[in-house]
Length: 257
Image (cartoon, rainbow, N blue to C red; front, side, top):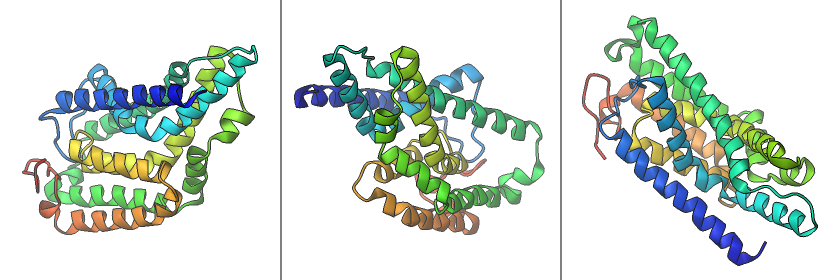
């Protein structure tokens, strides 16, 4: 795969991420209700969630996409079957869609119980802080390190576990998506805790994911991100009104974006 073709593919992927951000901003306008944001009807939520994942994950998954395309091109030159990267990405986003559906079901289940302690003027702020604390704790676990290592170095997947045909490409995308979910579910939990429809917090979480997965020595920053999450959890528990971009349920945000 020539450098020109790699550059063209990278441009297409990043343009897709940019377009997804534009659509996400337009669709989420006025939807941020902070912790406990109403996720809306299932069909609307799925559409927004998939667009969100494209916006947040495409820049971070770009190195994997380029590697997959390079290997596929080399196999095609040798007369073997080649499959386009969109099929691989379809499998990848199918995994994230499944994660989003599980999150939606759990949120609906919790909201449907009308737990009084979840009210923001009761224990809600501490529940949100606890969820972020859980995300911080996961940053320090061996499972996090294993999943992040697979996300940062997918050679074993692309070179050692290549699967033929379109179904094989989908399976590879699903497998890589599984490692990605294993790496990032804690950060996504933190996003739900501060407001899944918040563009500002989406940008922050996206940046954290990109730093971990793409930047040199990003795997060494997991502890730093964990410490930042602990600080955020304490801040929300102690003085949520001063937290930038945090919309308190039934109240006003600390700072608007």
